[in-house]
Image (tube, rainbow, N blue to C red; front, side, top):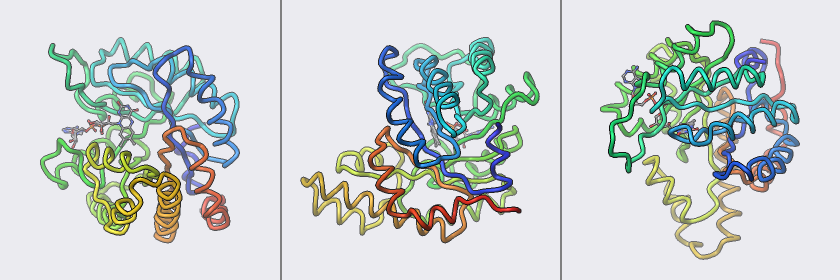
Length: 298
Ligand code: FAD
């Protein structure tokens, strides 16, 4: 089933997982996480794809496991940063053979330690989405990424949103955001995107941050703003692991309640493969979530 069909009747709940690096340990490690996630009734589970294609078989293998063993739809991430059309065709064949219809089309990050020029038939995620739709019409649903605090390589938010419109024009049917901690940033971005003619669902991507170094790493990678309240809590309990876990889960629970109160299109949780935190979080907001994610006739 194409995930875009779901938006016709409901707000979506989804989780992201990543494949472990070593191929031989893939399924054993994530199977348990996936079945615990399935108990929380997500609409889809997305599986990341390593830059330069180094988790190719893991991503497809895990997506297939989700398809065969859960009620959720798999969403396979696919990057194009160093790929030829032939490389992409091989992945698309593999996805089709395994009955996986949903792809999060991405450019991917260019690794800093690469010295030789990368050969690629694709420059941007929009090229990948367009290629998929023109080479295999009707076979896949494509979605993409967006950045409420601007993609680091964009010259301005305005330019980044213009480029986002190109992704919609290239056939993407929804966007998932980069993680953020300050909902006001997301609401402003949403308004600007809608004004620019972006009409497809924009799903906020939220990460329950549960340890001190993780928060700093996220700031470094995404340049996201951190509300003073969260910063203060984390500084105060810097060396108390249990306190930070409790604070992180409670902060994220409120963050999601606020997003739901603003009638967002869905909620996507960056799980970091930690089903325990996701389970605690969903228990905190259990009743409200059951109402929010319930199917409706539109
Ligand atoms: P693009 O959409 O190509 O955007 C990159 C830059 O180019 C932006 O500055 C944009 O403004 C500009 N741009 C976009 N389209 C055009 C256009 N048509 N013309 C001119 N300029 C344009 N990385 C992985 O390696 N594996 C993953 O599984 C993965 N999953 C992710 C999931 C989500 C939800 C998010 C938010 C990110 C994910 N990433 C992943 C990271 C992502 O690959 C990087 O952020 C990368 O730097 C940009 O990818 P993109 O698809 O957004 O690129």
